[in-house]
Length: 211
Image 1 (cartoon, rainbow, N blue to C red):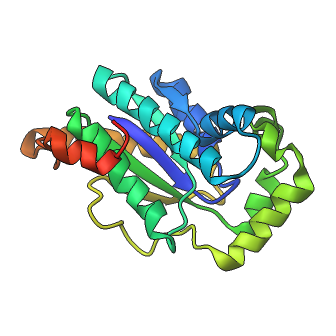
Image 2 (cartoon, rainbow, N blue to C red):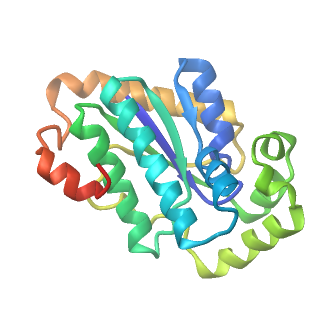
C-alpha cells in the first residue's frame, strides 16, 4: 500500500507522514522535497518551476510504484481547481498501472490550529520556504477565502479515501487511524481487486504526459 496525504497548508501532512514512516518503515517524500529542490534551479514561482516540480513528483512516484517500494507523499489540493483534483487521479493511475494500491488521506484542520502549527519547530526545520512566518501566515489567511482545501466528498474516480479531522489529534493518533484503515483494506483485498490495474501503457502515457 502507498499513501498520499492531502490537506491545507500547515494541516500536518508532513508530520503525520513522518509518524507513519516511523511506524511502518515507508519512505516519506513530502511536497516540499520537490518544491525546494526545484527552486534551487528555477528560483521563482513561475510556470517552468511548477512544471519541473510536477515532473519530479511524478517521476518519483513512478519509480517507487514500479519497484514496489512503499511511498508516502503529500500534496496541497484546492478542490475548486480541476487541475488539482486531476492530480489525484493521475497519481492513482501511476500506482495502479504498476499493480500497486494507494490510499488517499485528507486532513481537515481548523484555521486557528493551522496558524499555530505554521510556527512549529518541525515544520520550519524541514521546510526552509516557510521560515518567513509573516509570509506563510498571510498565505494561509488569504487562501482561506479564495481556495477550498476541504473536499465535499470522495473525489470522483478515487478508490481508497479516508478523511480525518485532525484539529485535536496528535500526529501519532492520525497515523494509527491510517494504519488501521490500511489493515481493514488489506482484509478486504482478497474479495476485490483494485480498479485500474489493467490500465494500458497507451492510456498510462496519455494520462501522465511525461513518460
